[in-house]
Length: 467
Image (cartoon, rainbow, N blue to C red; front, side, top):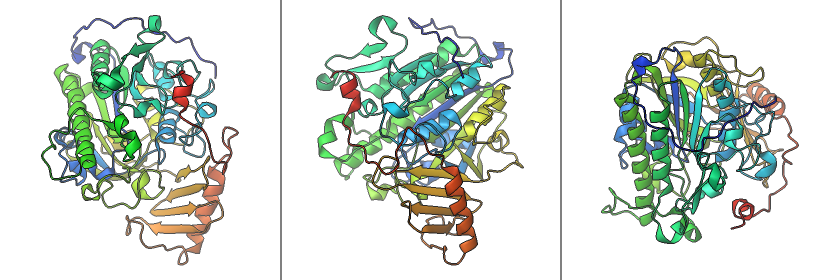
């Protein structure tokens, strides 16, 4: 598919506060807020007791909370690729965090933003992109977004006190917001700048239908001592006086900031009178990190962590609010997944999704209604450029996992064993056979990857920017 010409903005638009009632269209605004490595159990509304998340909990009380929502993949890049393209992990262009350049989005890839632009949406994004660097076809503003601010490169996004952020509003400065000396002086915490730009985009755009993708980097975390400077936080408040180790205080502070600023976004929507014309979704890109203090119970009742294909690696919190359209305080155990967002947002915008998609529209599920159409299956894989290639399938209540190309398939009944502790493969060989067939057909080999070939690269974002 050939691209249309994309326009970049050279300066910030002036703020024009027009109430949502002045907008005559019927298509809702869509705000998709996604945390980075936030576990299913890190939110109060999903059972967290030690870390307080009042704003996100309030969002859940005003809308619908899903208990069976799935990320696109077990790590950052494939999950984002599935979200943007509507293609599951066996079909989507970027299927692993590494390598970078050969797996970025290309000219013929179609994103959610490109589909929404057909309906006249203004599309903005902030935070972590991971699907194409500046100057590549895969950059966000070459993939349907009118604005991007934050990190285009996957590895660059790990640095909260970076010396620059990618900024489509600054063509005169090579599309960069320079923060010289920031790694030493620590004057600018990137999350705060990203939140401010998200709020500005809402103010600038709310008189027309808009899509805002808020891909927060919080609470992405590392426990490695050599990464300490990359994961510094401005403050450990409000947990500084807790009798916890320092890493736990920092993680809790990150979740606190995430909750605070998700609340600021929701508050602005309400202040501008847009609640009844704005769908707000909050979720995470994959499961929580294994380094997080176990007493936080980051992944709740699920086994495994980020990078695993057990539920702890791919089942995520998912909350949706749309005042007057989504019933308040509802909990749903309907199955939804990131690949569904393409068809869902297309239906809301009144346009046709791509002919090839692995998702289904879940508008009815989002609004708390019964939906006849169900997924044939959900599929994930991981390890395209690593020592071991893993696959997983969700088929009705069954979950099959194969850890290695020639390994036996493990089988779990998620209705009765959400922790995946009782392998039933020997008792249900016919189900195992069905899942094996799905695994074989769901993975379509990509010339961008060579399964089983371990990547030996370094910090590409530094090399690319000559730093």
